[in-house]
Image (cartoon, rainbow, N blue to C red):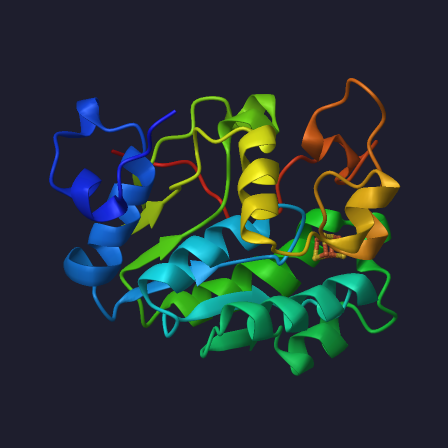
Length: 233
Ligand code: SF4
């Protein structure tokens, strides 16, 4: 399979470009949203792929990591390893407001009772504050991850801000092959069956045949944390 360089792809009509998502990402970073685009990364199961592609374009692109205080220690170690390996120069830990945490979740167990409120407190609100200085962001979401992401576009507009999903059409196999080819490390919990990795209290390993995200908020009727609101085109 022949892959065009992102440079070449960016100059071609999207319909003829195999890696249309990557072409859009390069054009956004270098031209359309230069200096005004952030990458949001969980440093989870597949995060290394998007971060590697961004680093190839510009290592100084801001990367926002939602430091909820609830991550697996393996995720924090993996974050540090990837930062060093890829030479990322502007990774920002985005934390919840301490006063709001003290008031709303003093015992740190809100996730057990009202996970939507916990995600709002620790993810949605902090990200909204962090994105205020940007007019575009990029995520590593993929159509293959779950039924709710099956129609994910490469580019969408949410609340007036452009969101890029350059890996929307990538398969998990392609990511694995590409990361192996580049010699990049994988999240250590993958070996234990974790296919999608978020906060420790709300993530379990997946069983054979389950969606990659079936281990997130399992049994709670919740599939997304709330940072990815519906798009309006
Ligand atoms: S994933 Fe769980 S622990 Fe993390 S913010 Fe959401 S509810 Fe809270």
